[in-house]
Amino acid sequence: MAKICRCGGETSVKNIKIERNIGGRRITFHNVPVTICQNCNEQYLSSKVLKQMDRLLTKNSESDQINYSIDPVEQKLYQILKNLEERDIIPPRNKVDMPISVSDIYYAMDRISKLREEQLYI
Image (spheres, rainbow, N blue to C red):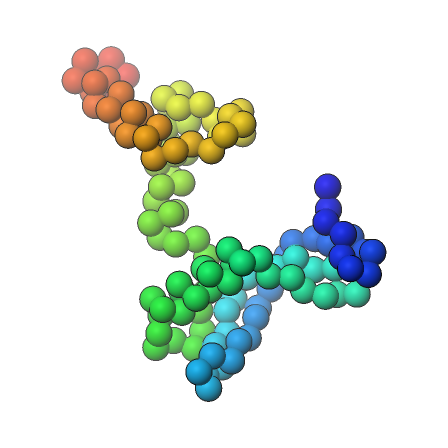
């Protein structure tokens, strides 16, 4: 279900380029997920997106062009989860009504180690 804008129009999420003036510098962020009203074109940034933009700016303090993307550590975690799901070690995220926790990952990693020792699966 799409969110409704103040004007009454429906919104959708799109990745766009955003320019911010920070400390007298013009910083351009590429591929930023923004909620945009289809009626009045008003743009909404979530607090999570703004915090991630600030983190990326801290990591790339010298750059004026920053590509908004998933943090490399988070990206690696998603890849590990995907591999665990493909091997039926943990249930697929779309079948679980709760997010997978770090303790679930440790449990899965321990299970992988035991399976490797037994040479049954991996």
